[in-house]
Length: 203
Image: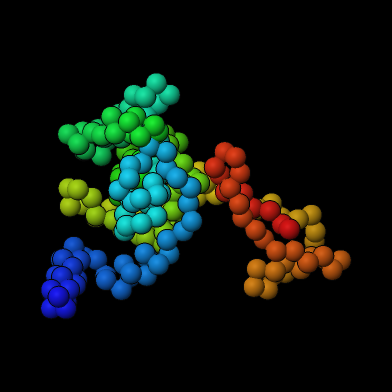
C-alpha cells in the first residue's frame, strides 16, 4: 500500500513536470482556494457545485441564455470558441437546473482573447478570484499554454471596483488601517453586492 502510494505520488510529480507545472507552486495555489458561491448548473463532480477545488476549473461562466440555448459570446458560443464543440454539455446544465459551469482558466483566457472582455459572461461571486489572480499560465486541451494576464485584467474590470478616496487632504495607511485627518480610524473591507460585483467600502 505504501509503495503504491509512493509510486502514484512520484508518477504525478513526473507528469506535472512534463506538463511544465511546478509542483510546489501548484500545491501553494491549491491552498489559496477561496470561498465562493454555488455555480448554478455545475454538476456533482465536486460535491458542493463550487469552482474552488482543482487546479484549473475556477471560473464560473454563464454558458446558456434565458431560453436555455448556448449563449453567444461575440462571435460564437463557448464550445465553438474553445474548440470543445464535440464535447458540448449544455443538456447537463439544463438538467442541473442552471445556466453556468466551472470552466478552466485557460478557457476563460481564450474567450477574452477571442471576443474581448465586454463579451464574456462570468459570475463573480461564484468564481475563485483569489486563485485565478494568483495564477499566470494554464494549459488548454490543444496543448497550448495560455497567458492569463489579459484574463486577470478582464476579471478585475468585471468583478472588482476600486474604492473611492475619502474626501480628505491627508491620509496614510498602516497594515490596511487608514488614518484620516481629524483622527478618524478606518479599515478597508470588501464584499459582493447583489449583482455579484465586489465592492469596497470604508468602515
